[in-house]
Length: 337
Ligand code: GLV
Ligand code: MG
Image (cartoon, rainbow, N blue to C red):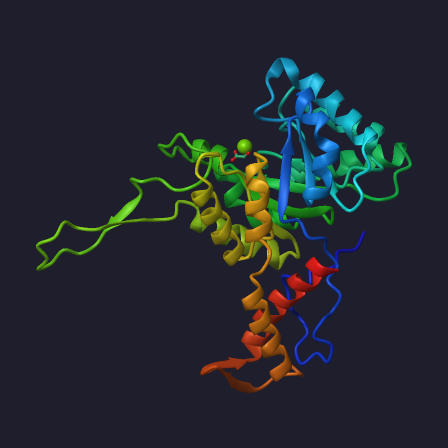
């Protein structure tokens, strides 16, 4: 299997005559998590499928231990019963040292291996985890005569995984991308929090107060900036897509939007949606704003061969901003395709 770098993230063509090289990847703005053992959620799936870019059947955390078999069977059934059209079909399997994972992998490939696009592997610590899944998938796909390889998406959610992020990204041509898992990562690092993503009111820097009589201002900092940046660099340099993971406070759509927006600006392609209310937020945030696309198109038009320097609205544009403009224009083109 050969890997094609994602044109959306890597506008490679310098001086290219065609500003719109065909982007080879699907838009995956929201990976929508479904608990396959809960019948009332599964009953609404047919209506949900056209509204999301990816449906993910979750078999790992948040599925109680005594419901693992029911979730796996429920996912197989919903995969068989529904037509997913353009919507991606993924599953988050249990972690590699769990009692359920071998049955997860063998059942999914045997039963729905021809429909399943991506397996999300949690708690990846190093390339060895990807190698193991890669080989197992190769054996099972051969046995089931599946010709389209199932891709692997790693969750970056352990300190060891963050340390090895670059070798995880390049561990297999099956690698689709990676998601930041802030909840497990917080536990793995020994962070003193009880949250699923987002900020923390105590993670602040205080402004200097020299000569001021007013109370010192505290500026909240981003707990995830370092890891997100590290993951985006590892992914994009390997031709993969990077994603922000879950945002657990469903009562705070503004904070969810801000977290997703940071990820989008930093280079992520999408985020997980755990609650239906987060779907529209992700669609909105991970689609480039119309005004920015218009401006990007003006840059591409002003520099047809992608070289030189021009002034637009008082701002200098050159080869580097042409490439940035192409990222936005390519994404916009994918969305209207
Ligand atoms: C996701 O799995 C997380 O741990 O944040
Ligand atoms: Mg996790």
